Image (cartoon, rainbow, N blue to C red; front, side, top):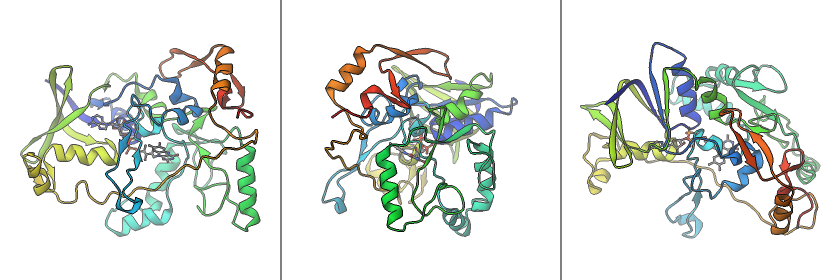
Length: 355
Ligand SMILES: Cc1cc2nc3c(=O)[nH]c(=O)nc-3n(C[C@H](O)[C@H](O)[C@H](O)COP(=O)(O)OP(=O)(O)OC[C@H]3O[C@@H](n4cnc5c(N)ncnc54)[C@H](O)[C@@H]3O)c2cc1C
């Protein structure tokens, strides 16, 4: 049985930061476990790939909700990253931290150390803000935050219309106020996605005290009495148990962290018993109180040459133009990419003009 000081379950936004910070101490050994694959797919790194990963089951768990009473019984699509970097490898890259008032409310509710004043130094430390340093932003950190390299004229028109309605302009949603209308900044460096894996895992990947396992879906936290002492997963037909000498850190995301707790016997006792799971700790709130934001896409047929979308003819034309190479900075492997870039930041298949 392999042993590590710290075992981190889930290599998403949280897991990659934890792996980086913990393995910075050479005196401890750290194992980061991810159910999905390495992040070598070029769709992850080219920002336009975002629109193509929505239903890619290799990189995305593609969950569905149960029928929702307030959506007339419809089920909601719930994308979640299933790859190194987790959801930060498939998300929309908007850099938005949350309002200061939310952090302050957490602190008031008893989460000491989570007020905005407490967390701001960490936001500043983690950031490499393209616009430079100020009270709210830092430079030189691992997470690149940039302005959009290409601003679509339709988006500019949308912003102009909002301003004509007297909505306040805002060019920094992570500054003094989050209110208003403007362009978001994005977690990108030189036009490439800066996922948590690229920002935090890549710089730590050569450390001898950090082991990263991919394709390993943890099925259970091993508990001795009331203490987490390891994890279990399957490697082919073989069940593998890893021992944690200090801590097991659960960063499998808002849906799967509570799921794994419940599979391990920590959760609402009656609910676990109904499913034949031995109760180790009755914790009624595990798996409850999930809050998520609603998101929907409006799709319209337009004739504007500034809109983006897919057409077969445009894609074929782009493919005929031949391959270009996109280098993955992290792995230093060269991937063949079938799109030639014909406008800043967008491959031809998504360029203005196709209908
Ligand atoms: C499509 C989409 C668009 C988004 N857009 C934005 C945006 O523009 N801006 C923004 O700020 N936020 C955005 N978000 C939200 C943001 O990406 C997430 O809030 C954040 O990444 C969550 O981080 P996490 O570490 O909690 O979980 P994740 O990053 O989801 O990481 C969890 C990881 O754990 C792994 N895992 C799960 N179960 C197991 C298991 N049993 N064993 C091993 N590994 C496991 C998963 O495969 C995953 O890699 C978006 C999310 C999605 C899905």
